[in-house]
Length: 159
Image (tube, rainbow, N blue to C red; front, side, top):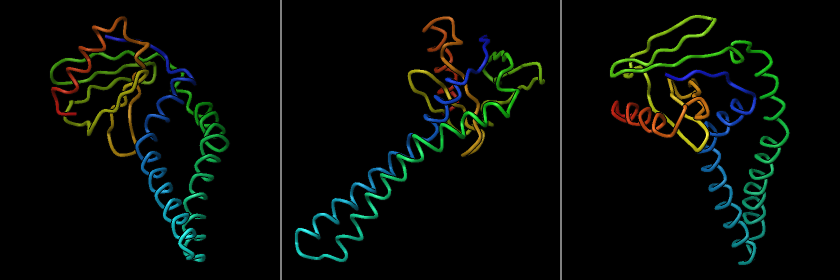
């Protein structure tokens, strides 16, 4: 069993983990396009080279604005709007269910209702759908053995 409150820092860490894979793919694609554009420019193909270089560089610039300007503002706004994020949550699990309770209510969800899990050094995300997930900060776990036990339970169900 674990108990905790989602801090603003936890919320931001969860959102970054959620975005990590798509952003990485976007940056790879933008880099490839920019390199192709630079190569075409060096070969004397001005128009397609400039277009591809602009697309790649624009993708990088757009992601920078998104990551450092828009999303920090948006995350603060979302965290303030959703009061339930600041409530204390208690999670418990067994072979069949993940149970959660808070002042807002309680639920017992079968493991098979989750699609996947993502994890980094700070957070577990359990996905209900591509865009909906539960955040379980690792700081809520009393020790690394409990983190490992939770990870084993999740992977046992193919997540």
